Length: 282
Image (tube, rainbow, N blue to C red; front, side, top):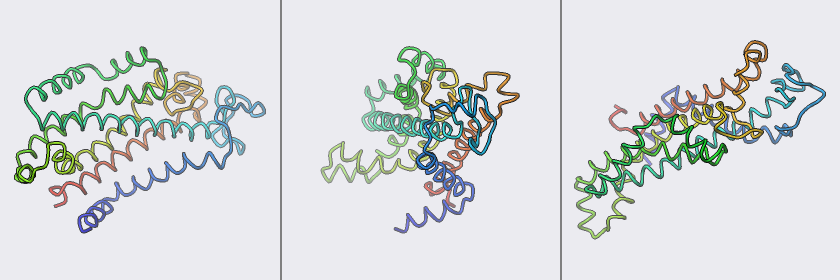
């Protein structure tokens, strides 16, 4: 319990990280619960309000090009964007942690094969490969999660491999072998828990990168397929000069949500790094 209290003390003493954690919690609750109270369908057209209607009491953020409520779509789009960022990062982390741990622990030919595959994937420009894969498998939320995960696992794999190479030579690993633990038990019980801090910090950065990637690919028409809203495909309306000049409610709220969410996740990652790394605590 003492390490846990120490973690929370260090984390909450970082005002930026604490504010970011509170903001993200409130944001998640809003995008999950507020649409239930509004009771509006994000794909229903309000013919009485009209197209490109400015903000009003009936539509707090106006309507879009076909008369749909922008606020409702912003909230539902937040669900999609956050879900893509979280699920894609989790999938990538699982792949990367497993392959990185196996490569670092067993070494030799296993390490060489896994690291050469990692190097090949990292050599290609991320967005070029992502766009090509999106064109092949088609735009959808599930395919977007798959694309981000399959391209992002390499970073955490290299991090975990480096830590495992250091940890497997420690005395407590030798003691574990002498006690009769098999290799799977040693990796699961003793090595991976000691890489938890690095994995947690990387996870926050991966979620932020996933949200940005979703926004970019959906903006280009290669991500979440309309009419399902996401912050990325809602920002696609900003390709019109008319929208940029006169319909600010169609792109400023969405762009602001992407910006404030990503920067909050980065602040949260900094706070977790300081709280989890004993060297940085001092």
